[in-house]
Image 1 (cartoon, rainbow, N blue to C red):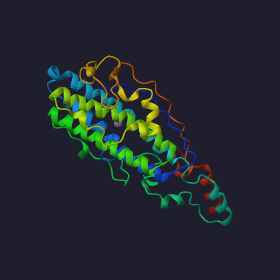
Image 2: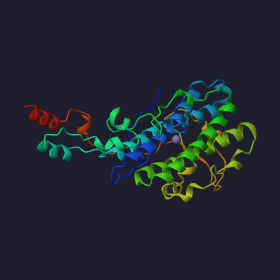
Image 3: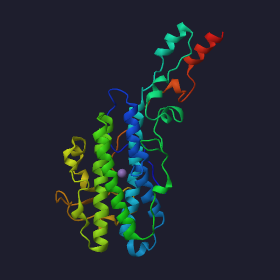
Image 4: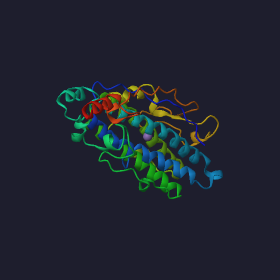
Amino acid sequence: MILKIDKLPVKLPVPDAPNANAAAYVQELLGGKFGEMSTLMNYTFQSFNFRGKEKLRPFYDLISNIAAEEYSHIEMVSAAINLLLVGTTERKDRRKASEKSKVSPDPLRDSVDFRNTDHFIASGQTALPVDAMGRPWTGDNVFSSGNLKLDLLHNFFLECGARANKLRVYEAVSDPTARAAVGFLLVRGGVHIVAYARALENLTGANVSALLPIPDISNKKFPEAKIHEDKGLHRVLFRFSPNDYTRAGEVFNGPHPEDGQELIVQDEIPEGFPWPDLPEEPQLNSPGVDPDMIKHYAKILG
Ligand code: MN3
């Protein structure tokens, strides 16, 4: 069972201006092969399929716990995409002008030139489970072999691949909303990289931490990540459950591979921030029918 909390894990700034193409780019971090839907569903299915819990409980607790945090990441990235899409098509102005000329309004005209037309056709200018090219997320992105060493190795690779993609989205999109989302994900994904490295080390004795960071640049170089690392968020694993998954700390322990500070499991989940207000989009009949549009057609048919 899962406990759901109506909050976001990080405060996202409201964009100065809408940016549909930035939203399309950020979709990669939601529904891409290495996006948050992939981390969420990989760890979720691995936790559902976990055998031998008696013997390996700390590893089960670690994977289950991270799975729960990933849900908060799909929520946060979806919120960022929504924020970037607010106001990208015209609500009223062009319609008023066309009322005079008797030309039918086309408030979605700008969307023709945006990278992802599904944001305007399939959705009400909102997030979708697709990548930056609009390809739907698929269960093919889930790896759940049942072999713990192999699954942990996959998860370590998945988080490093995710980190590479986050860095590239950061380089492509300078919007503060997108960068706040990426900065936070770099830090929390960084915790999960360390968690899977440490899990492999505890399971096998291999020095996986010696590979880090991948790619070879510190989160501290990015201001939107550094603000969270300065608060210690890069070495805390939150226990996303009031009473369960208590043994993850038997795997997530020791010094952080980058700055040597102690890794911590915190029993309380983060406080969270309210969802930003997302206004109606009447030109998309979202959520309801646009009264001005009806008035316009009544007049010209009339
Ligand atoms: Mn994540």
